[in-house]
Each structure stands twice: as structure tokens, then as C-alpha cells.
Amino acid sequence: MAKMSKMEVQTEVNSSADKFYNVFRHEVQLMPKIIPEKIKDVKLLQGDWGTVGSVKLWTYVPDKNAAIVKEMIEAIDDENKTIKFKIF
Image (tube, rainbow, N blue to C red; front, side, top):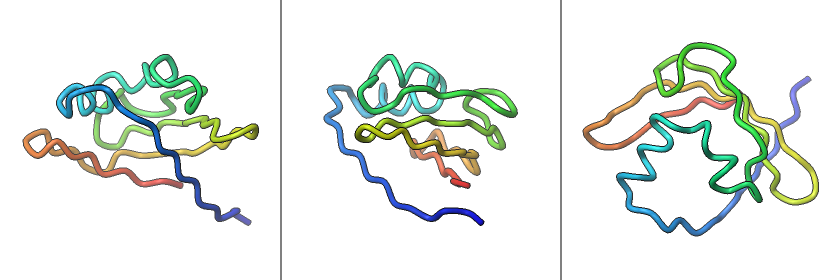
């Protein structure tokens, strides 16, 4: 049976909205280098980075325990700079 839980993380971003969106859209694999205190790893499991249908495995480090999350991109809107994710 799946375990349901909630995790919230806040971090200050010293970047323009365009650069931040670009990282999530095209260079998400850099997130562990950008904020290593919050994200330990991002692995691509299926598809291509930054494409609809791609599946990634995130390893977060919110406190002393790591949380592992599988995510799939459902939709991308470059004009409005939005990405819709499904977490499972």
C-alpha cells in the first residue's frame, strides 16, 4: 500500500523567473548542484529531459531523512512558463 505524506520546502531563489523556468524546463538535472541542501539527486527514468511524458526520480533531503518522489511531466506551456507535473 502506498504511503501518503506531505512535504513542503522553501528556499530563496536569486534568479530571474526566466532563468528559473529554464532550469526546470531544460536543465533540471542541475538542481542537485544548485541547491544540494534540499535536492540530493534527479534521475531520468523515461523519455527525454524536459519533455511531456518524461518520468524523473527526485531524491529530496528536507531534513535528516531523504524523500524519494517519482514525477511525470503532463503539460508544458512555454508561452506562460508553466509546467504541470503528476507525482506518483
